[in-house]
Image (cartoon, rainbow, N blue to C red):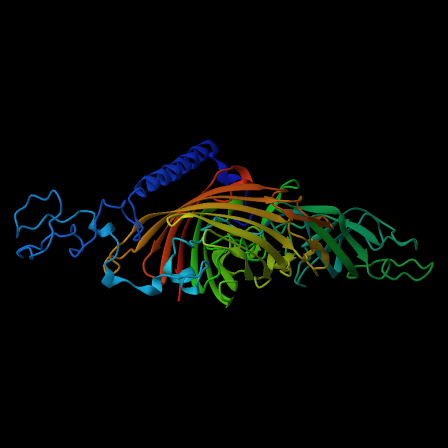
Length: 568
């Protein structure tokens, strides 16, 4: 695979892909229904059964008044009404005993809080089912397209050897040698010479295209075409600095200014656009609702995201995000810091060669969050994140020279709001809305002649809007906290939308054009996963996300992810 890519080649089986995605959606909703039915078994330790159906007494785990095996019933003890077993014979154990309330001797007052709000302990350790994180879905790559022509110029002062004709004649054939060796056979004049200076002497000839066997630079690559209108040899003593009214006759061995150009469309086709990774591709645009909750808490986390067959010909991408959230004001204000990295398409690419893949560092993001309203049933919070440019610049090179440079200087503002509603101890819902606004643009530098790179404009990313909803259901709870690897399992289903609020920006100058890969897009993805609570301090979340739309709105075939949260 070369750096010249077809951004739509990944959609070769659109109908099959649509069918697989809808199968995935059905599986998600079926699983949600199963989890709901499983949840019908009472799990609350406070009141597991209707009053009278599970009487409490000294035989913790058996029915009240039951006599332990091998021990006679004590005088004065009352037998359970309806019991027919003789004294000294134990009643079989109740199969639902693990769903009963805790024995009085096991009571731990630290698990209860008289405050109707959220204590710091309750928000971070005591009830993860109350405060689960949304998983997310976003690819986040800044991916654009580049279109234009490249000009490669040869310009050198060379001595000319007259092969035929004579000094000063218009029909002479003059040969030039690059490198100074012999014979002179690298570049030849063609056609009839003419007077370009107006001093009455023949001083300019057109040139034939150099042959591949010559020492002179020939076509720099496929798609480049020799431009005969620029191929000239100008007599250095005549046209370059002619004395007024004095003809200068060229002779054998005189110096000539030899110039010619090759023009080539980038990608080999004047109508074709080349996908170009934006700075920090696949790590650039940031979505707040990724491993996120409206609740403030102390935590550190690691996200791993694998994107299969990412759009634009990027192939498979592995992204790693390190993050930490710290509470500044108990239960009210926290600040979160994220740093994404990725094994992905490199930020520097060379036309006509294989993809350069690299380990790239993305843009650092700081997310302050404040709780606006809360009670036991809901939490509403908001904030404004800031993404700062720490990723590398993007470079597109050709023939050893920079053709295009996108400087990573844009700061992004990320205003957001999120709401969590607790329907019950075991079922909660979340919703988020976020904007991604570029506060300034990225300078674009380019030059189709491969020389210096003047700034041709500033590119401003389109403003994005994210809408997310999630439902979380507790489907398993280990009643014996002293045994078992998984203490609790929470099933998550999510739906995500990302869309542009304006058309793509375009930077165009000097035969070069840089724009977003798509003028606008509307991305819809579905995500399902499990929060596996391994202890009060550790939660591991495996999940999958699938796109529900086609074309450039389908930014990957599927996404597999694992999120690890550590709650100190």
